[in-house]
Image (tube, rainbow, N blue to C red; front, side, top):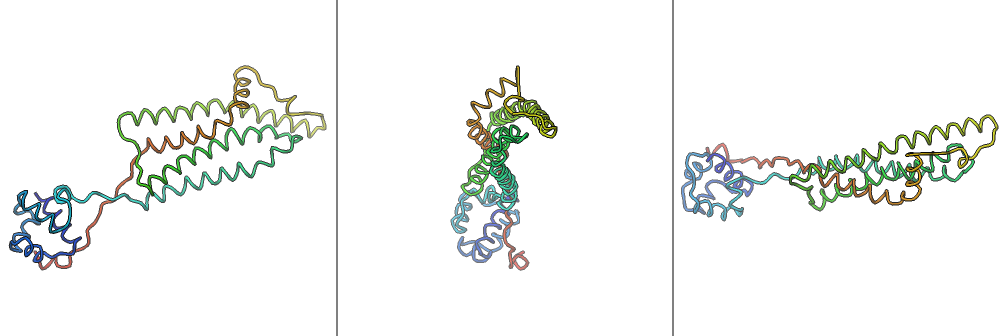
Length: 252
């Protein structure tokens, strides 16, 4: 009862209507309107419909209150870090292109595989997240809901963890080989990346897959980033505070 009265008052104040004006339109006394708003009496369904018409609001607003509005400022603040990290990764990917041109460099192999296997996928991951987060902010798109959302998100995170576990030994071996080649170069011995970098077993299989399917990583990671946002949290709404009623003191 009290909530309905408060909702009537909030809608009336937002519309810039006084209790006297509302009472005159409803053909009732101002005291009756005051009792409605304070919760002393409750209007019946017909009166609620009339009040909603006079205040030009939906009757659900009087029954349940004004729906909270999304906190766009908070969402913009959350959007900026993702865009910043994605921009840094893309800049690092583009800026390191020259490091893969010098075949005589001891660290050629490290940068040649670090860029397409780590930098570019991470940048696409952030890009997918940021694009869909921006869609949620400006196009009012919303993350998924339902019991399957958590399982889908868990599956996406599992894919990222599996990729990280597979890449750590591969990149570790690549770094050690590059360091060994650098030491050979410092000693004046002859070396080449193709002859000194040897992989076998699981690492060899991963190296083979990386050289064949690395072009599929950007769209896959973009989709994972988008999926992580789609299965993420919804907008956190900020409560809508109605403007102060200048005549509140005189209407009590």
